[in-house]
Length: 285
Image 1 (tube, rainbow, N blue to C red):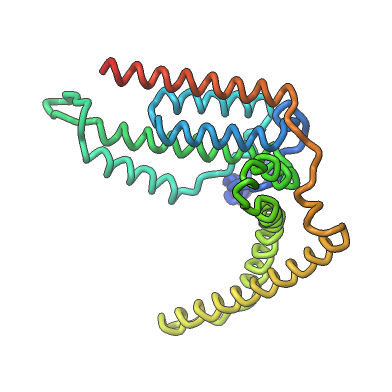
Image 2 (image 1 turned 180 degrees about the horizontal axis):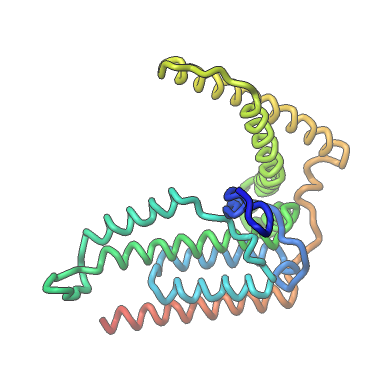
């Protein structure tokens, strides 16, 4: 179909393309959040997680969300870094909200002669907000921290546990290797899946034949994934040996600086304010 101004654009080009979740890849650029020690970020995430575990109220959730938004603004995180939510996830959230709202509970409101309890809906919204804040905390660490800095930071933070003869260095090395291999394996699996989809397929009419083909394809993909993983691990082992062994993965002279202590002080002060508000609110009501 053409018009006076030329051919009409295709409908497929007007559809918004979904943004995938980018994990363990720092956002390009520098900022004060990028320059923080990795151990400071891990301590902040751990502290806020513990705070929300024992005080999962609206005040602590709001203060934690404000800290995350301030950190994202300081780190210059673009909106394009946020992944797109698929439709099925929105449907699942809506279904969960409806089922939770049916539970009722305090507070109650009158709507058109109906006595409705909003307790279940408010609890669902609170849990959803808490989950979003925790996911945002993890995403901030992923977007502003190099994967190579996580292992050495864990070695420094776990140093007091060596008194209990806990193999902190070995655990830190294992985690560092897992974090480095995770993005690489995701790319490999995506290539394998794309190559599998490009293979021509016969049109099968019976359901039994289609189920059998799906099972065979799943087994083939698993075998290929295991083969790729073993090959990559062998290459990574050779590279680690050539660079001086696993001790280099946990060795990093980085230590907390003035900005790190200020960040920890702000986090502790904000957490204390949230606990005080929650305590006063509970004692009042």
